Length: 163
Image 1 (cartoon, helix red, strand yellow):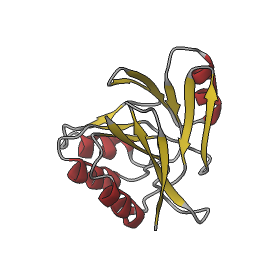
Image 2 (cartoon, helix red, strand yellow):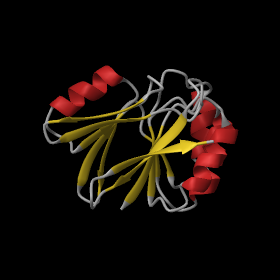
Image 3 (spheres, helix red, strand yellow):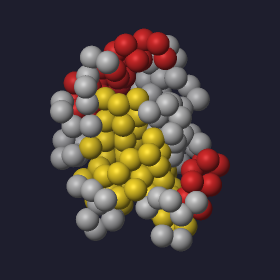
Image 4 (tube, one colour):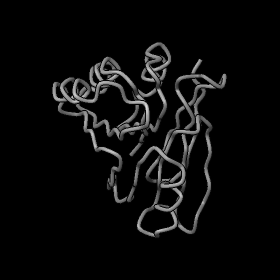
């Protein structure tokens, strides 16, 4: 299974749309928080079609009530709150927004991969048998907009730059 993992969109729908073009091969998508506005959910839902999109809250979500209302129009969009615990093709994945929480989850030994955002910097580290992964930011605030591909068969991560 090919999973697209991204974070920190911060309403940059132009970069999001570029990334979504590159994510067409994704069988599932994970957003690690800070999408910000409800219109971002619409872009995600329309692009995803029937493919699942898992989203956790970051620290910059705006109108959560409206985000939930828009998400309810797209059955494939799943809002998890501050923590998502997923099983994708036998890979146990935890998703949250904060690096401190992610590191603790990775050390717990309960997951094969833990994804997070918040820092706007791509990062990966092996902690025991767990991959700790930050896909970077789509916003482009630090000049580099990225997302990550994760292949559940090879367990390889590929970082993709988004112009």
